[in-house]
Image (cartoon, rainbow, N blue to C red; front, top):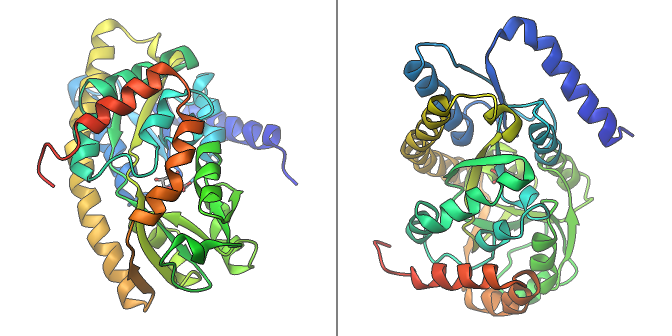
Amino acid sequence: MMTRRVVLAGAAATLAACQARLGSALTSADTHVLSYPTVQGVIRFGDILSERTDGRLSLKMFAGGQLGNERDTLEITTFGGLDFNRVNLAPLNSIEPLTKVAALPFLFDSTDHMRRSMDGEIGDEILASLRPHGLIGLCFYDSGSRSFYNTRGPITSPADMAGLKLRVPGSDLYVGMVQSLGADAVPMPLDEVYQSLAQGVVDGAENNWPSFESGKHFEVARYYSLTNHLLAPEVFVMSKVSWDKLSASDQSIVREAARQSVPYMRELWDEQVAKSRTIIAASGVAVNEVDPAPFANAMTGMWDRFIDNAQQRDMVERIQALRGSGAP
Ligand code: GTR
């Protein structure tokens, strides 16, 4: 079995081998395939960066998890082996407590609520909280809403989840969430999920429409139950080691280019959700609507477990105060 040290060394060797060919290109990683909206958003960021610096700064994207899973590439990013990374909030949950706030189930009541919260000062505070951990938070991307899928049957209430083995990303918060619904949580990187579903190592998982589709999980997990329990965003970060090497004016360009890539990413996201839904529906997956209330009730206790300091509590309240004050 490959140890993490071997995986990290392998990724570092791949990067070193590319170095000569890349020249001065900055590097970024993503677990998703090239066509996925998060990857295309970061590529757009790279294009804006090149334009604004007349090609002095450019970006090389390592998509499809070729440098390893999010936890590993994040570690490489913190020590400067990668310049940028686009990750879910989950691998940051054990690093920075404020990231748990935006990853709380049933916190956001709509995509608009999530965007309003993350595009304003609350989002800025979460991005800034990453700096002491060696990361410069640049912007948030969309991730739609996550729901449960499995190989056994439709989930209509938490009672249907008893005893199910469900894959979650490697975060205590996700583990707590699934346990509070009475299921067994199995933390595992995304690239192992298809095989684990196919071999019965897990009975199911949870994710948004595009990841359920692009990872081919829908081919083996034929029940998708729309709990819509999580509307957490994705985050785009830069290594602080790389950031510190940039001039102040290049740092501003990086920040602006990242923000400018957000509307483009969101446009692609909405298109991708529609495409993925069509593919999944055409494949005959049984999709069922779910009353979210019993799921939300079962999860209230876990909020207190993971929101255990005053700064987090204050942020939760400020996000709740922004509920329903915009378009649905
Ligand atoms: C996806 C997300 C990835 C990854 C994945 C997972 O929706 O875009 O960054 O975190 O979920 O479940 O591991």
